[in-house]
Length: 140
Image (cartoon, rainbow, N blue to C red; front, side, top):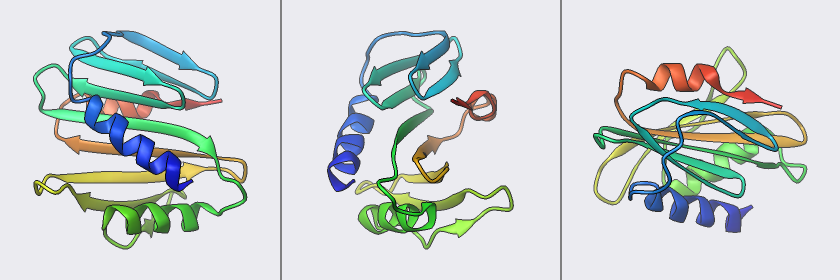
């Protein structure tokens, strides 16, 4: 799990650089998500990284096995590694927390899923299309 988080963070930084442009639905084995025009997306294994072309916002979505850990424990571990706030459980059942990068940029993180797989979503910045992207996520 710790290796996956390190890979995720490296990929998150890479996603801020130009990559493959994917507009429309992106489907990979565990997830389907709509990437709007005006966003650049990079798919690498279990992680989809997206950044608005105007660089105002970015999002990363990772789907992986829980390896028996609870969502609460996963959220706590991710928050600890990212030096974030204490995760809280939303009424919808997902856990959320915030953290800041070494440059002081704040991100919002969410952990959801089931006993077998988790979905870890990180949103940085503000953009009118973020809500639509989040609502488009379809976990298989």
